[in-house]
Image (cartoon, rainbow over all chains, first blue to last red):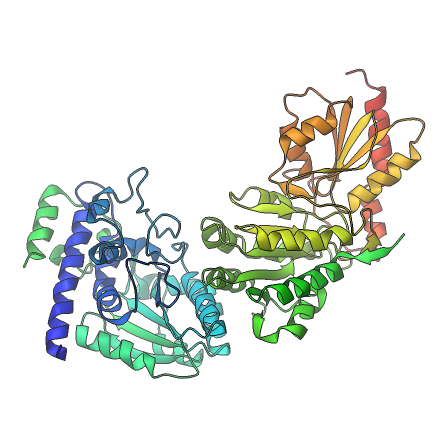
Length: 274
Length: 311
């Protein structure tokens, strides 16, 4: 497939995932729409382009691993897993209901394709490092991809993991920072400023790639570039828009974990229809 | 009587396990010469991860290693491996029911010189309260190796509480160990003393001192969770009263567990332990145990009170 065709196909897939997100959240109950939509293009590129996976054999040893450290955005991962056939798409509508295999945050024991329990913020990068070290011990040439949030990096453990990953030269660990600039209560730069990001990660010994996190071409180029980095972990700092793809939810803090009215639900679905 | 050390027994057992199973890995937070994880490092440098003084990252990294099929043992002093890394142990390791094994070394008051910041009076309570967690407190060095072996085999998280100091073995290398099964160290008929760790040694001393006056049955409860309630009931059945003895806060530890197990048995219970206070520095372990009344005399006095009372 030529690159333009691939990008087009992935963009279409991302639209489908965003539509799934809206359907999962539904009407009247809160859901993490904003952070799921900001990660949607990256998640699409990972699941539908980059990662070596086998949905029929989710535990296949020779596979890449994905962790959503910002686990509250799990619904976009659930959408991807359902689209790939890890479980039936009918499960999506049961998300967060009693007895559902799809919990409010990723659950390794309940959801096929989920690699670890995450959601207590700041821990996913460390878990990913452990996986990366385990894969190296077994000489399995696969990668571990971890999406972290820009609000999340206020957690001290992120920086413990950042130091440890470069200490262990974990070049099979790739972090993607979903830099949507909003945390639960408002703009990060105003609430608790975590900038400047690039020099911070560079000084912790990481290879840093900066991209527009909604430009599919840039996303796949960055993921490919990370393959060629040896001796250090890579972080892709992806500038994103919270709520991307749903006009009224873009940069709107109330959709960090907000409910949709019937009218808003229909408007969102209409915007995300082809 | 052989005086041995749980930490060395732990290190030896981990090395032996490492020889048998290449999936065993160890993670350390700069206390390897104290926890004795450095013994594993010497033989298996590639399977040993010095994580720096960063217990939280160590715990979550161990979770990741476990998810690639490794069987990690993580190490620090009990107060840090349980307290500093609590959320990491809870969130990914325990909810995920991962085979991550947590070593709480220098537990209780056994790091006598370092004082309250380094002495764990609440580690058992913390670990007991986490669903999916198995909690061990081996009674002596001989039992420690058997517990380490069991931890690797249990498909879920385990915590082991290790004493820093030398003291005598009360079991032999051949004494059978079964997860979840309390064992009678000395039979008796008047009062059942359920004890963990070094307090089992103190209980045996108390039993000897009371010989001919009050008959104490001394029981080693090295698996604190899951606590085998039926075995506890059966072992206490012929005794009129019960004593629990632990080097831990009386809130949330062995005593709480035993009291819950015996809640329908209508037996009076006395709790010997640390009375909801923090530790402090002392020049010797024995001096500190005396200061906190973790002594045979305390058990003797409790037995005398229970023996006199008409319940």
